[in-house]
Image 1 (cartoon, rainbow, N blue to C red):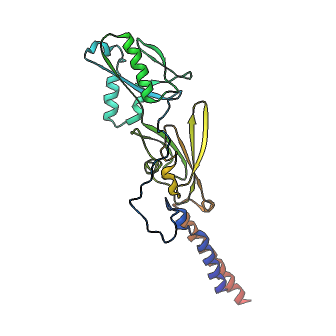
Image 2 (cartoon, one colour; image 1 turned 90 degrees about the horizontal axis):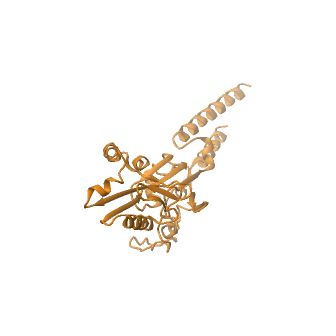
Image 3 (cartoon, rainbow, N blue to C red; image 1 turned 135 degrees about the vertical axis):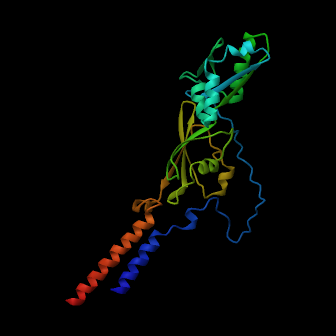
Length: 270
């Protein structure tokens, strides 16, 4: 009976172990190969250029030596909102209140200039299109600045923190997104990270492997605005999450050992 109890406990412990190969990033090095820390891995030959889409929000600002010209493009209270929210650390979310939303047809509407279609354009091309519109309206020089509200993405599944995050940069990698989301859970299938990415007229689902060094040269190494990242759980997740799995296994082992002990005592008294 004692040997049987030990055997059951060993099987239980072995089944609950998670191999390092299942949680280590950027693996697939040949055996016995000396890691070259200076190895150069070029980015994939995919132009990193986000294309504006309907329902995106862009921030447009104007500057001129003649302040009366730019005053016509400033909504009442916008400057105060920007100053107050930046002071409160609102970050990219302030563009929701002060920016211009692209409508379903791909247009933004600007004071004096009317509707301008910018969906389907890159940030730089959209800036140039707005600049052309204002140059045709004013004889004086007015400089246009147009930018998106950072890189907003959503994480669901086995992340440290699921939810929507904003990275206030023009470019961010998948590892930047992981770090900002509290890293991936120890019970996540890191070889199956799904990226739900928006394209003109629809979405696509891409699968990437965080174990594979080839990710560094992948076209999905850089995330894009509105990406949704989903990490599947391992099957062992059914026993509990990463925080309480160990406690669950210990409790189960205690009940098992107690049951075996009682069974042995009863059997010995028969």
